[in-house]
Image (cartoon, rainbow, N blue to C red; front, top):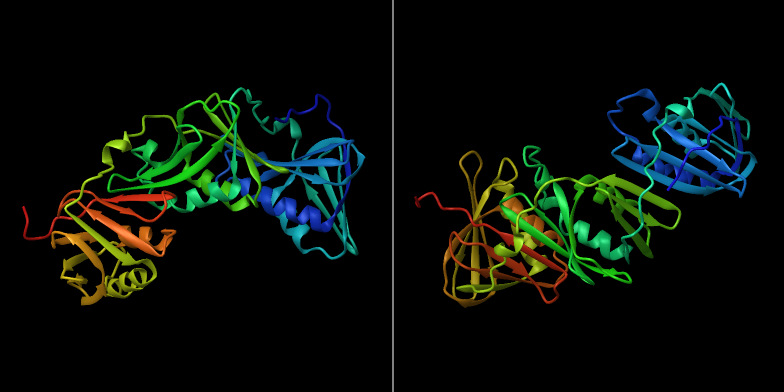
Length: 378
């Protein structure tokens, strides 16, 4: 990765506004909301003779860099005020932006008739990005990763007392690998296609926020994945994002994947999603309880709230096996139905208080949900 030079020097660079605006729109996402020292509010700028400028942002646990093409008139490094610089790069008129950083850390920006002088920071105070061993490098499709994140992130725990569950488990099993999230009440699995000369099995817990940010900034093509020394590096095109991995043991989720059911229910996804939204209108807060009452070829879905009232609606369904009554957390069920990548959803139900499995015609997504005990049950 990147290493700082030994000597301080001024920087003089000419950017195309479009290129600069695109680069800072990405790198500014790496700025920390709660910096531990002022220099971390800045964007590190490294200008090299080959006509490339690397822009970096980090909070030492995570870091983001973007390589931006430019005319480098004077090589060097500096740290510019991050959010102000990003706002200027986006809003100035003209097609060319001139940026100069003096040895005293003053930052000058000129574009068209606009001129700015800002107070920068010493690059010597900026943390060095770690250099990772690249013994373990994989590649995967950017769209596949974005899809897997969208299918799982919402099921990760928010409980900081269980840090391992606040992340997404990257379970590398070979070419067919998995991204997994659980909060102890539901389990979501999105599948990934990994590539590499040798794919070593391993389990790595990625901070959920990092996975979401990486998914937002990836635009397509192949993503390189480097795993080393408790860190992960995502590299795609001119963008690199590194993060510490979450330490700790992740539960053996394979024990929670039921294969035998007393009831199978097949529902049209879009119609089912709309029904859940309508029935949930009687809940004052997210997470109300809905109850399925199964009939011969339909399900009555009921929602009841002591504060607001009650709602019910029927939906046609193909039902195999025992007709039972089962209750779920409405939010947990609706979130899975909303992202499911199929026209039809199959719910495999083991019983009133045993895990329910949601699957479809492909293995891209799998979701396990624990039913809720009804009030009349002990």
